[in-house]
Image 1 (cartoon, rainbow, N blue to C red):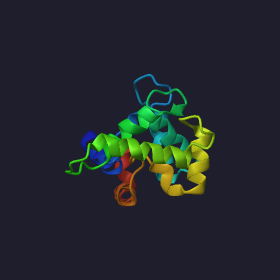
Image 2 (tube, one colour; image 1 turned 90 degrees about the horizontal axis):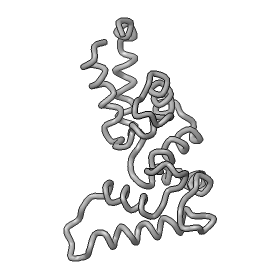
Image 3 (cartoon, rainbow, N blue to C red; image 1 turned 45 degrees about the vertical axis):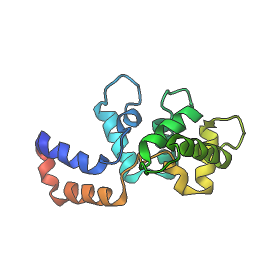
Length: 159
């Protein structure tokens, strides 16, 4: 498979995943090596809920400090929500959403989400896995990717 086909294939899988790189680059060296890429695809395509929670949390923890802060939530929600024309300040609505999210997910009430908080909330309600924006492929993209990859396995012999 040539580079162009591989790029198109991975674009299909990751089109809604804005922060893919951060989740794949496990050693934070600014590069995604082959092992990181394969592990990332494994989580995307066949990952357990535990693996997907760890991946999403790492993506949402923008500064890598082990917590998702109010500021990080605000930033991600602001970038993932559709803008609606209204007289109200849109930032106020997002701030309200952050507060509602904290009430639902911040089990230790420290004003930020640890992995433990996030994990507990997601186990109670799996829809919260991508609470701050999409970071996993949607089912349609997943199926399109697998259909392309498994259509002709011999196509990968020349990689």
